[in-house]
Every structure is written in C-alpha cells, then in structure tokens.
Image (cartoon, rainbow, N blue to C red; front, side, top):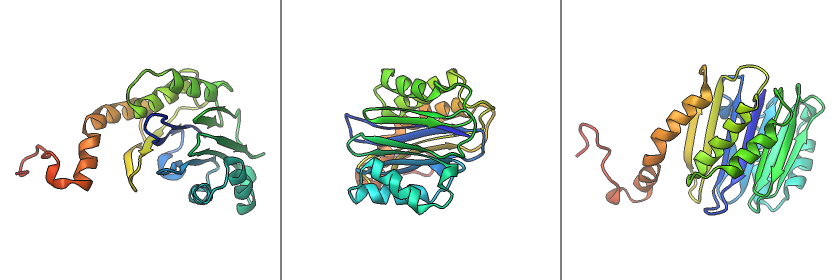
Length: 224
C-alpha cells in the first residue's frame, strides 16, 4: 500500500527517502535514514523494526544484498514485507515477499531505488527513478519529490493516496529535512507546499543548532 523512492545526492552525499500511501502516517513507519550510512524502507505489511536493523548492518559493513539476506532471517513474517536498501556507495537491493500486495515492482539506478505495491501500473517505480534523475532542481529534496510525483502521474497506487513524507539526512546526527503529511486529500500536493515553505529556512535552522550565536533571528514577536 506504498510507493517509495530512496536516493543519494552525488554532490553532497546526503540520503533521502520520499513515499506515499493510502494508509495514514506512512512516513512514521517506513522512513529509515542514517547519515553516511544509507536508507532502508520496510513497506507493504510494514515491520518498522527492520529499518534500524538494516541500517546497523549497513554501518557494520554489510552490502545491500547481505542486508536483505539478514533481514529475511530476522523476521519470521518476512514474506509479507517489501524492503528496499540503499548504501553509502549508492548500491541497492530490493526484497519482495510472496505476500506483497497487488501489482508490485521496483526499479534501480546508481544511487537510487524505488519500489511499490498495489500499484496502478507496474512502471510506476521506473517512473519515480526517471523523474528523480531527470529533475533539474538544484535542491535534492525537490528532486526526490519530483521523482514520486512522476510516479503518481503514471497512476501511483491503485487506490487514492492519503499520506506522504520526505526526509533527508546529511552529516549531522538529525534529519536535515523531515516533512510529513499524515492524512490529506492530496498529500503530495500538500508535501510540495510544505517543502516550498521549508527549503528557504532549512539551512538557518541547521545553523541555529550548531552556531546559535551566528544564526539569524526567528522574525517573530518576542524574538530580540
């Protein structure tokens, strides 16, 4: 019930993941990122615990294929899962359990991996990868969003989507960008609105965390 795109920005080394689903609050369950390590998504019938395990394995030196093999051993219900893994070198692996719902599939490129289930069209994952790679935006987050919007334009999920999320990590131990739409009639449109609001302020908020004395004011009443 989810379609997702994970990617690495070749210019900055940042990792990001964007996804949408007919289920509420999909980003709370499926987005797993770690600076300098990679990205993991557990979707379909989600086991949120697989993401942290996968990132630990990547950080320990396992390849994406090895991570998938280890996750298959770690979850007795792995056949209900669809898992994508992307590592620091831009390599990826995908697992589709026998219980993956509806039309499902995946697409891979250097530094990007997309997958989905209950899809309106089996070409949706490739459309997401192509949309990301073809985007001319200077902002990694916008290129990720352009990718999933391309998947939605091909039909996205077979049913109406209700939630979406986009997150990015850089070299800090927190998410540089972390936007969620937990339930909306047009969650990707709302995600675009939030991203347009966020991007001009993103770097200032990061600066406030590490050098608050040098950061600009918030520009709100009471901020001296």
